[in-house]
Each structure stands twice: as C-alpha cells, then as structure tokens.
Length: 430
Image 1 (cartoon, rainbow, N blue to C red):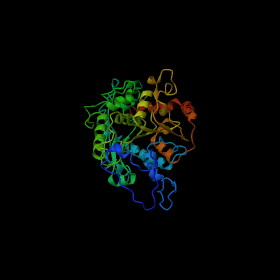
Image 2 (image 1 turned 45 degrees about the vertical axis):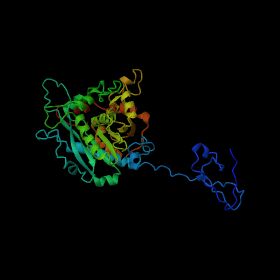
Image 3 (image 1 turned 45 degrees about the horizontal axis):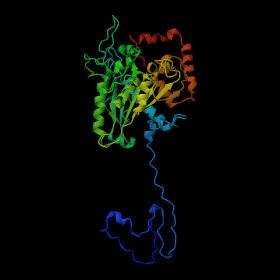
Image 4 (image 1 turned 60 degrees about the vertical axis):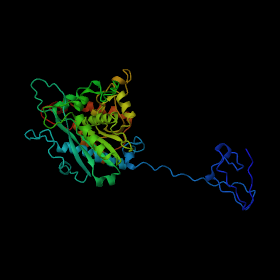
C-alpha cells in the first residue's frame, strides 16, 4: 500500500480525476485507513504529525421493551410473572375470567323458556345485563355447538345445538387503552346431555384439521373434537359446526382490522370450554390465519384456561408450541378435572410413548382452595376467580397429585350423586 502523505496546513487537496476507470481510482496516492471514520476524531491541521484521537463510540438505543400486554399474554412464557403472581397478570386473568363467567350468567336454564339452553339476551344486551357494560368490548357473534352422539334408548336429545359462548372485539376507545385490537372468544363449560356424553369419549384420535397436512401424529380427545366439528342441521340456532362459525368470524375480523392495526386473539374458557379454546387456538395457527397481512405483524394467540382438562397427546403439545400458541392454565390443586383425561397415562408416563398418552399444554399457575368440601366447589369458576382475587400460599408442583388424591379419598359416594343427575335434571358448572 502506498504511504500516506501528510499535507501542510491549508495546502490544497487535488480532486480525483473522475474520468479514471474504477480499477485505477484505488491507486490514487491518498491516505487509506481501514477504520470506521465515525469512531475517530478528524486530523488536526495545527500539528502536521498529530495522530488520530479515538473518541467514545456512540451507543445505539436498545430496542424498546415489549408492551406490557405482550408480557401478560405470554411473549416470554410468563417468566417471572407467576411467583409471585404479577398484579397486571392477575388483573388480566380476572378480567378474562369474567368474560367467561358471563356465559354462565346469561345461559337460560329454565326448561319452560323458549331460549332454554341458549342465551337469555341478544348480542347487544348481554354484556350490559351481566354487569360488563364498561368492559370496552362489543359482541360480534354467538357460537353454538353440537355433538354427534348416539343417545341411549328412552333419552331424548331434543335439539343438541346449544349456545357455548361468543366472540367479542374491543371498541375504538378501548383500543387506545389496550394498545391493540383484541378479539376475545369466551366459552362456558359442560351443561347439556350431549356435552356430558362427549366428555366421556376419552379416546385419542388424529385432529386432521389442516386438509393439506393431516398430521396423524397430532391427536386430541375424540369427544372434544366431536363437539368442535359436528353439525346439527336440525337446530335453528346453529349455522354449521362450532368450528365453521368460529373460523368464519375470526377471519372476518382479521380481514377488517389486521392490515391496519396491531391485534391479539385471546381465547378463554372454563373446563370443557378451555378444551374448545385449545382446539381453536391450534386450528387458527395450523391454518395460518394469524399470519401477517399486507406487511403487518403476526397476531399472537393466547389461551387462558380455567380448570381445563388435558386435550391432546405429546404431538399436539409440540405442534402448539411450534405454532407459537401461548397457554396459561389456571389450576385449583384440589380440582380433579385438571388431572383428566389421562390421570395415570399422561406426560409423566412414557412407557406407552407420547403418541398414546395425554399431555398438558402450556404453563401452569397452581392455586390452592382452602374450602374444597365438594367437587362442585373446587371446580366452580367462581372459586377460581375468588382464588385469583384473594390468593393463598404458593403450592409446590410435587404436591398437586397428592392434593387431588387426598380430595378423592375425603369424598363420600353420595356426594357424587349430583354428577349423575346432571345429565337429566341439574346443570352444574362443569
């Protein structure tokens, strides 16, 4: 390399001949410094032999931290938010739990009513009637589900398509507070005869929700899948299967808001409802409905499960994780439903292989109920919301199964009679 010439002060610098070809321009007798000019001070002309003076490099601004709602919706899998329970996350869990509780409050249990086993109110009235008039959301669609069940002789199924929940979207004023357009899908738990029977269909079956890639290794409980995909053509309320109703409305909302606003999809359910929420979350991710639209960002999918059972096998869990589905399971350690199905053959039992065993998905938030006197008490959604509002001491993970087994031992046979009567007379929150 040619040595650099030190110019005298105020000496004119000859301009390079722009007519030279590119190969010859590199041979000009100029100083050549293989350094980043921005990191060094200019050469002073007062002293010809003065060396370069290093200066402190500019530190680029770090990327902004994620918005608080990203954290409470599982962007970091709720790290450092569960023990102790973060106040913002606690508030969100209560808020979404109240949206689920609205399904129970609005469900018509009067057998003499024209709306028996359906919602008491119209879409525009429901949130006001159940005390959520200031929630900042508006309901866009009611969701109905039916199970393709063969009833025993002498048991009339009537219309099996029943109201199971709703889809709501945040209003414009609420968007400014939340920082995004939030779509909520809220599901209630088991009430009707067909839903009870579907719960007992505990065999694993391939989900096959993506027609282009069936993925036979991804298996879910057959009863939940039946309820999610079956159609009752005789029911005047249901338009297509539960799945078709959900996907069509969510697709519409994404098309309406996804290209211009940041969005989130939040699915919340209690008991059986949390299973439907899990299937919907997997379905949305598998069909890539949450992928960016016209240069937008991917829409996060979050499931808040309250007292939810296991839904699928190890393949189902792995696929949900690959799709980026975030699941937070709120669990009352005395609630046996959270240990089903697969109380014995589950994620802790690998002899049969993961494909044939039920596995929980996501992160668990264990809560302890001090007054678990009956099955209905420990599993009731009101109990879960009460535990979130007034939490008790932290429960160690190893104690969960021990507490559940102890609860079973304390129960008397007659205390379970309500469960058997539920398919005929009663409608407990399960």
